[in-house]
Image (cartoon, rainbow, N blue to C red; front, side, top):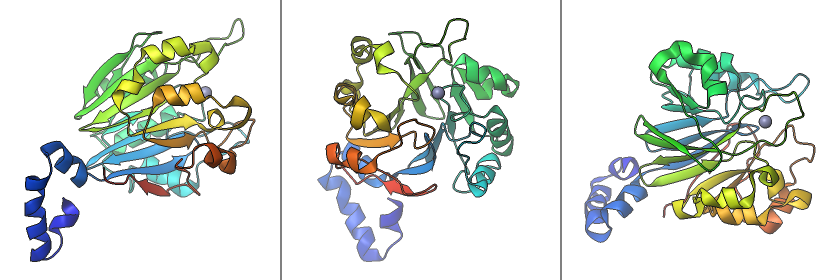
Length: 277
Ligand SMILES: [Zn+2]
């Protein structure tokens, strides 16, 4: 809508005609810009109209490995554009390539509107923010849901893999996020073999009519290709994730051979706008 009203009187006249031709839902989605900005690794900024969600975007990485560019990290922890006015922060799990409590703390101090939603291992590190931190507890086959700042978040437990005896499991949640009539899914680090396709299908993602899904790149091509998993997610657009830290490097051409419409980013802060429906 913003774009239509910014033009001349002729453009305004066109805008007035729109409700007569489209249903209310169609008009709403046609006027809502949906944009995905690549932040780094598995981290993205999702903008739907005036709502902003950061997922797995604030992290410091493992020693010697990939780090967010300094300007990106700086903008994140000071809540500066494009990371100003963030409504919701999500983190899939407590691993250093997905989450830094210190960066999230700084961001939440700089932006008093931001709410963090996560599992106990992540949320427990920021409990000083009181009601601005919402802890969801999901278990195998049983999702947990909350609505914050008019954004609905469904957390589903998706096992990260088998942890060696004596090592505590780092609990991974995938998230289905719904903002108005737009919905998307981020799987975090999920091991489909441990989760099992039966359990995965029981979450009913195919019924969610997802607009886009962030899927670890190695499930989209090569040795670890998981077409059943991709089919069970059934998103309109596939956004490969986890650009860094994987033993098998991201193979862009192999992904595009199988999923020609996959959305890939050249560098941090590049963004993609979802075509109007
Ligand atoms: Zn991980």
